[in-house]
Image (cartoon, rainbow, N blue to C red; front, top):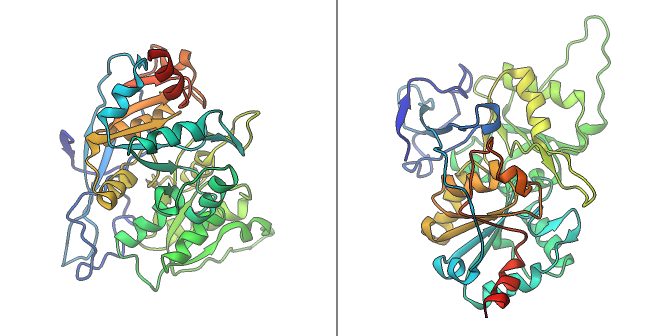
Length: 373
């Protein structure tokens, strides 16, 4: 999939190359687990980076080689006019949640009827969100509260992706994860049997900056996971920084780098990328991103459900996460204008990411279908 190999990886440093991998009991990593650093940090052509994990029995270190490809400009997106043709061309629809299914705690009009239509046609539905504040179980309750019948098995949040990634690399049982984030990450780590510290509880902690003060940190922290955090403070930044910079081999994992999120339907709010950016700024270390547009979740879903990626349509409201996520996975893509992306932004000459189709909202599946009858 990727055209050329680089001799060094920007996300690796002397400490990040040692990932505590045990070559003797490693989970099947013959498949590549790709990770994508935030495209917006680079140019508009958005290079994509993959990490390849290989055995090195002598050093027991991760040998990270990188490949990159440049996303070529695509033809302009086509406005969706025949939803039946798109529906019939795929087996699975992957939906982003914020801006597609709901905004804040308010359901977007027509969503229940649209999901019912797709299920009636025998389509598999999967819901993928970069929001790490909830676990899959907690998201299941949110769907239920909004009147949607969605099972936990159909939900994949970036909080789950962080725990799944750590399990996939056999994260050592004697190591801990420091969490800059909310309850969702903690619950998923607990379900995975991974020790953790931090989270919302550290939101009340303060540093007394006085002469000679030295902040201590846990030397057994082997990974720092950073997600959206409404309790973000200087204590967390400093603790995460110490772990990443001073603990040999400590991983820096980001659930996502979204610039904004929908906490309410009234306006956009600073997203998880702002928390990740603070830790990046103090460590000068690029994180491994497990949420969209990284294809880690896409690969996980394809394996779990035995899905052919060309038989998937990714539906989302963000160009640089949702649509890029689908394109990186080889899926069809549909942009909805019910979230962060406007038609003018989509059609701007500065935008290099073009979905296959665009429409106002997912309930257009119903209205457009009716119009063609």
